[in-house]
Image (cartoon, rainbow, N blue to C red; front, side):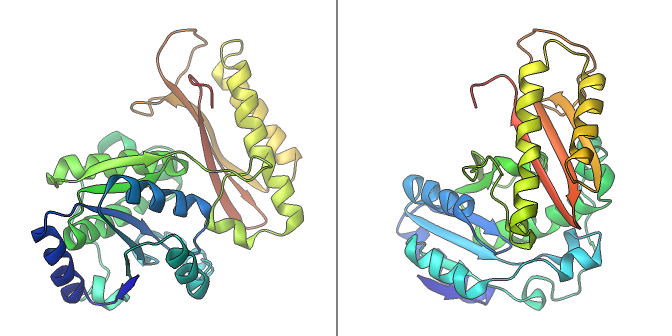
Length: 286
């Protein structure tokens, strides 16, 4: 694996590969890597000739400075994991390399409705910051394929919209959420949970499964209210949302129905200061 910290050196090397007609896959991360990230590396290696992983904790997508400062860092272990996964390139830029003119948002992305709900509602400007850094990274790497995880369901939809808005010639591939044997979705933030908190956190997956079982039998608002109470009862401090939505556009589902409209349930909740998110598609066998 080759490590690059400078954009110019990385692009020079990648251009050599592209001149040899080698396809490039890209997995952007903020580090604290786990098997979910590595599964995306594996998908990229299976579909592309060359795989680039970036590690950059992007300051512009944190609307809470404490969250940014407490984001887990495990660079030595990250590098070891990427080497074991036979990743070809690690791009490890500094903030000055990505934002030479400062981190002020220079472009406003017209994301529309999707920016006003769920994560967008509870984390103002979060998706503008996400789009800013992903746009920069896609311009730098210019990959044929971009690999993201389904755990960040709404973010995947935002990035797909970014690609459409900018006309970037990159195909988005979404990998399934990887889970611990307990059902807990793998996440870098899990590193901040105690063993006891990890056990409590499994309630999220249990509630996702409960909603999947009951979504055709109860009114959505009654079901989400019941699940919110259950999360609080099981140790969560606050619940930002429990939402049943159209899986294609995140429009809220307000009626009980047995239609073939694809649905997804999404949850965000705090457990001892750690914000956890998860989701589950309701129309498949997951």
